[in-house]
Image (cartoon, rainbow, N blue to C red; front, side, top):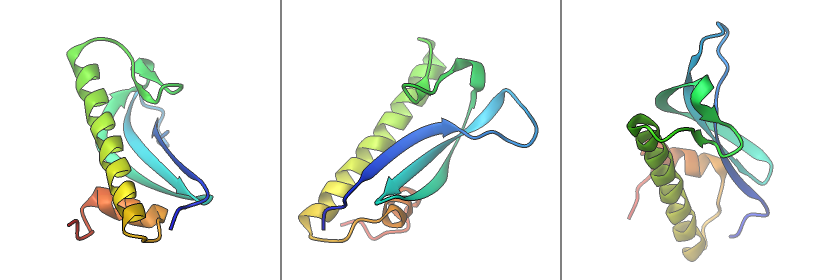
Length: 106
């Protein structure tokens, strides 16, 4: 079943202590219901471009993080397509569980 709305975004979550190194989070929103998960990757806020939702710069560490985020995004997209092809309901929780590895992926 196709959802009415879908969105995913990567962002640096602001901790209680204002540190420059923050954890990169993924937020998936399906039909207005948001779910968040940590990517377990940390990044400097000064080298983050929130508009593009990626690390800025051309250093190897930025390229590596961006490659990781792109591959994560592609995996989610492929799983979403698989759910659509199998006429299954798409929810933010299902997609988050897939990212966590808690679903049976055939």
